[in-house]
Length: 193
Image (cartoon, rainbow, N blue to C red; front, side):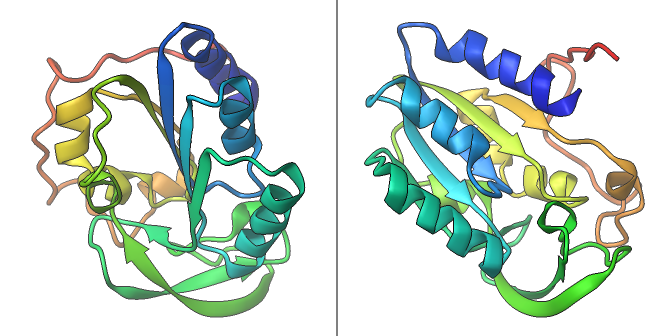
């Protein structure tokens, strides 16, 4: 249901006359990136993918489709920028992660981290509907911590994958974290089952 529901959310927002900026964290092969970019040349996309193998496939896909409104980077999204972390690449690219290796490993690689705030610091997105998609296999809460200034400034629509890996993330301790987001900043929506 994750893919269907979130696509419906983004198509509702993207069907407006407003320009859309999508920060696609865990872009994989580019499903969301190419979808949003294809709706209007005025839309802008920044795609971040930690897996070098999947990033290269995204790059090849972009070259074939020739979208000029997509920028892409090979970084792991995190709460701290500039660290080098172990990334566990799975044979199934959709389960590769920096937080766990509970799958058949293909290999370990070292990737650099970045934050939402760092990536969007120099962008003026006042005239955009901002969407942040987080599908980073257990590192979503860390990514939010690294994007609090952006979230408070632009109040984006956040599409987030929640799974058992979020709660078992040993890098992110829910008890020790405090956030500047409170119920007045967050609108929750329940996804249909």
